[in-house]
Length: 204
Figure 1 (cartoon, rainbow, N blue to C red):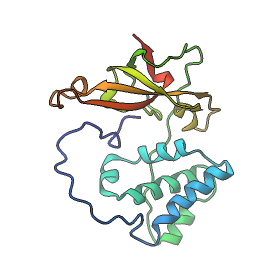
Figure 2 (figure 1 turned 90 degrees about the vertical axis):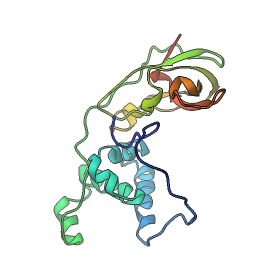
Figure 3 (figure 1 turned 135 degrees about the vertical axis):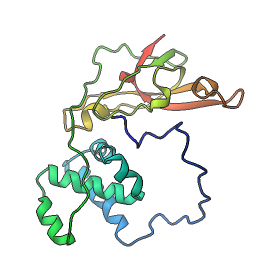
């Protein structure tokens, strides 16, 4: 889905402050959010795509006020409640007050089962999609032309896997774009490579 989480290429957020603290976690509770995600995927309760989509569904104002691991925790809490593992009332009783949750899940979208596929060197265009469900094609490349430079192994299609649907596997492609085709102020000769699922691409 299109939301505040898809910030690639957006302007107006100011300079990124220098980052010098390389610790992976900065509070004792932070690893727990990832542990829940890993265990849930291992037990088949939900997929990593579902976890990503739960984070995408966090309302924009709330999303921007959270740290990275607060977003992960909010997504895992939302999925735990949606899957009936615990109730919101039980969690709020333990937390001592209201807990943030993501918005309700909308419909997913199916893989393109009749897609002919591509080979290295093919010129492609990213479909200009705006689905309500989970999508792994960044907004700044949609509708843009590029060239396939690598083929990645098969993986579950996110539009299905992110919604608890039977997920078909398809390749993704490393597509190279001329930077100036994406951003007018880009450096001459610069390129950008984006990993994009097959169903999001058409051949030119």
